[in-house]
Image 1 (tube, one colour):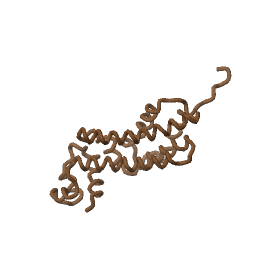
Image 2 (cartoon, helix red, strand yellow):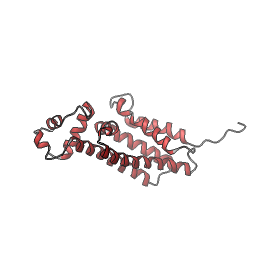
Image 3 (cartoon, rainbow, N blue to C red):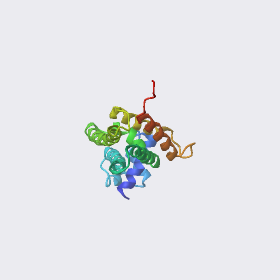
Image 4 (cartoon, one colour):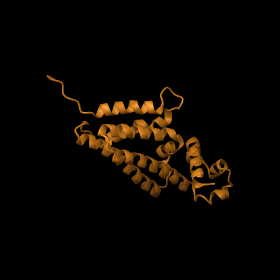
Length: 193
């Protein structure tokens, strides 16, 4: 048994039951361990929750840092960032749901650490928007508000997206890209207006 198997199983259980309703026995049962044996791999339910949150953020930060470091134009960076974010959210919905909904279940000191890391992720998004503003491609917007809007629309996909639904994750990403990029793009003033 590997710790990663426990973390993945716990993410599914936390998504289904919620953090507070899930028990260590539920997790042990899911990975076919005795509850006492589970403690050889993890120290507590908080330890498991933090590991899930760290794993999800690590994956997303890595994805976004690759986009930020690319030589793409600002509009294409936003497009690529949205595509990789939606892909990440939809490829492992349990991990995504725990990240977005259960971080509040962390004890205060652990929550503060998590929020600090999550804020670093948000700042990467803000930097992408600022890059477009500085290049005079995007309308001057408050980067924090634009980032909240961008992430908020995408984050709610965890509640309604279905792989067998009307649109694929990629098609939705393309639609979101068009909506946001067109909303950010600087427009030329019409003559006489």
